[in-house]
Image 1 (tube, rainbow, N blue to C red):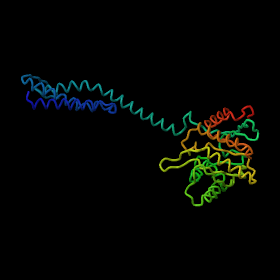
Image 2: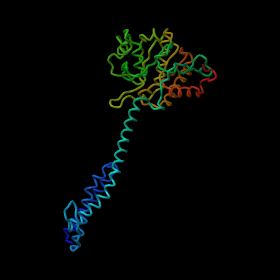
Image 3: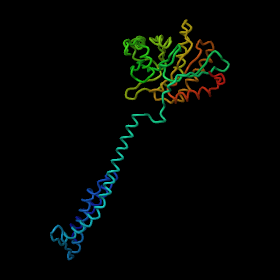
Length: 350
């Protein structure tokens, strides 16, 4: 066998092996029959070239499609026919693979559709009923800490609502599922169809900003309640900068939540000392909506900061601070934190 023939045989074999490996990849399942055809052709040519170059006196004869074939062509034809007979068995495997791939894709599509139609069973669900749970401080029957469950739009008879706002003090659009949007909508004046015709609270908040692009984290701005005074008996809205925004990354919870709580309660007491009858405060779980925060840690910080404020302000005019638990997960965490707080008296729960 000449070096040229040997090289050509090697090239055909290596090409066939490489193509065989490539066509056998899992992502090409379902196409094995068509992809293996050129592999068989390369193997046939390589084997025929090797045999008749190394053994030039060898003979093979046969007939195919009415034609007589002899020599190397006859051997290659025999090899091809034998290979096709074996390869035809892969047709059924290709059909099964194609059906399996189709079923997998349909299953993925259905799962995606179901995920958009209903939340996972373990996803937090809104609490439908508005209930109150509160505990007095140990050795201090003047002050109480508790929680209110459900949508703040169903909370009646509390003097102060705290709005967890961003450092730019830009309230959410009224159609967004946020506390800020709820306060903005219910605090504004609406027509008979329920459309907002005067953005009372957002406009007042914008006036307080007076052209400032932002405030420092933990800052508190006070506005009136707008229509909430008549509908929900709210006397004041306190907007606290509890989240910071970053272009492309959304909002994140501010670092010093204790400062937020302290500033809110200090401002309520200042207004109460000036003659406003502010005795009850609804405090949301600051930054746990879109602020990418840890729920349990946030509740612990808010609770500890409230206890600390009452301990250091024994004459505070505030009577009760409620943590707002919108979902069942938030309610569970808040209830557990209240019941395990050593500064509170569980036996006096109401």
